Amino acid sequence: MTRSYKHLFGPVPSRRFGRSLGIDLTPFKICSYDCVFCQLGRTTRLTLARENFVDLDETLSEIEHWLKNDGKADQITLAGSGEPTLHAGFGEVISFVKARTRIPVAVLTNGSMLYLPEVRKAAAQADIVKISLSAWDQESLEKINRPAPGYRFEQLIEGEKQFRNEFSGKLWIEVFMLDGINSTPAEVAKIAAFVRQIRPDRVQLNTCVRPPAEESARAVPEKSLRELATVFEPAAEIIAEYRAADGGEVKVNEQAILEMLQRRPCTADQIAEVFGMHLNEVSKYLGMLTRSDLVTATHRNNDVYYFARKNSGRAACLKE
Image (cartoon, rainbow, N blue to C red; front, side, top):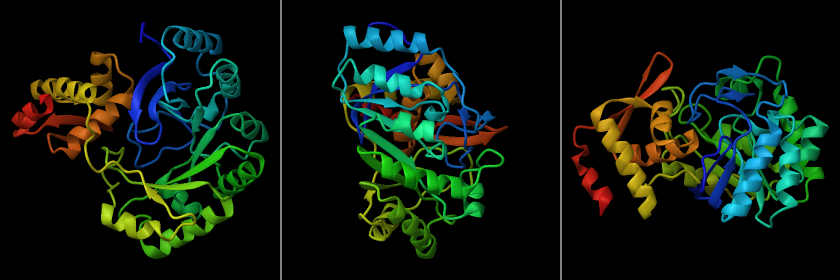
């Protein structure tokens, strides 16, 4: 990028979207859910109230500048520090982008706000909308996603079904699976039954290969995910990144973060501040480092601290 942005980040490498420019419309961490598996940690403001959380004109100005001075990405994605559809003007952001570039627009949403007609109308402008469903009733929703008070499972299902009826673009649904919580064949069959009602174009299975908000959130082994993928219609694809990614820039950033952690333990927030990265970017690198067994994480006072392992002298391999 040619300048530092407040509301844009990346483009970052994404398995699903290639090089993806992120647009972050909610300050950390405003969300309708407080998911036990969230890679960004605990929700600090749990709400269903839609507001202009960040300045819309400022955000559009940054997008305009990026398009004129860089403008190279495979995807422009509304995602970041919270639930993007909570921003009252997210639809204006989509229409602004669509009027100025042919780069496809994706919205990564948990789907919780789609029970509102105005949210469905705004989201329907996108090329791809990724929604989520990891529960099968109110009890499992509260255990896994911990929604804002008063939110009902029925709102989620009816909103997602109605959006499918109104949306002509590509609808993807992500099912986040947790070992011992929603991963038995019987539980997965219940989720899959609702997925069939929603009729997505693609079903994607994920699990917590990056350090989660809660220690109780444990990853489902890759072999088990592959076995469960056949329960869904269409058959699900595995998007969990069990192995570290390749790439020169990625390895340079991993190395810099690892060297910092070799000096002292840090939270993801602290790493983001030091390197001027977005939390989503930091989370990706920390996930790669933990999967390479170079970094470990521990929970302290509702924060997750990352440590370099004693054998992280192996980090030299990252430079090769």
